[in-house]
Image 1 (cartoon, helix red, strand yellow):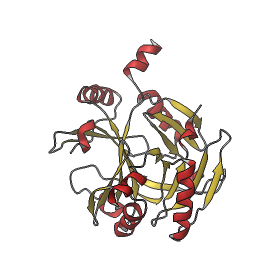
Image 2 (image 1 turned 180 degrees about the horizontal axis):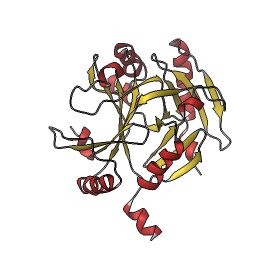
Image 3 (image 1 turned 30 degrees about the vertical axis):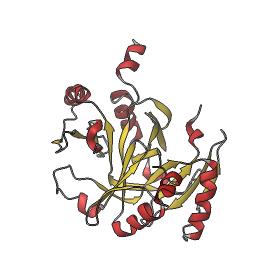
Length: 139
Length: 139
């Protein structure tokens, strides 16, 4: 029965992750121009859709999406959200230099017990972003 | 040069998506027992880590993570966040029945112009979750 359950419910795939930012022009400068995430759609008054590997990251303007508008249920948060991207050790070192050069210094760095490595930094809206080596969740 | 840029910056992989819920016991009943997401770690006072396909969904208790604690930068939001899981049409029909039976009715349903199909529902904390067919972002 357990096996049947697992066959029936494989791990679900996250298709959309979401962060919120009131200033989407500033968010665009950061996520598209600096982080180089390919942009799918940008509407500075409501949303920015960014292509990631196998999923889409959406940055919504919460003061807009908290109010019913285009037919999707209202949603929106205030405060600092969090999201982590995979990055190799070599990529982390590249991003360290680029982040410092862009005036967005690393705010924390953790070497995890299992050998994984994370750096943390803020986006312009104050969300806490992380680059973590892909082995972060390795057994 | 453009090609070089793309080789250098492939689409980044989202390793961790995050939602927030003050009542993590209620969140666990929903995400683990009802949605059947495999649980990696649960600490009812701070967090719940859930395995998804190729990524991890973390539900944090914002009143805890907004205050510096275990060394990671403070973060946390209030309000309704959003996240979408992939689901086939057949899975959406299965979930429709299960959601109704669980007293968590579908709050919106959208048939997108490109043929994709989404249903929306609330988690116990008021976050807006979505099941969307995998072709939602198909060209």
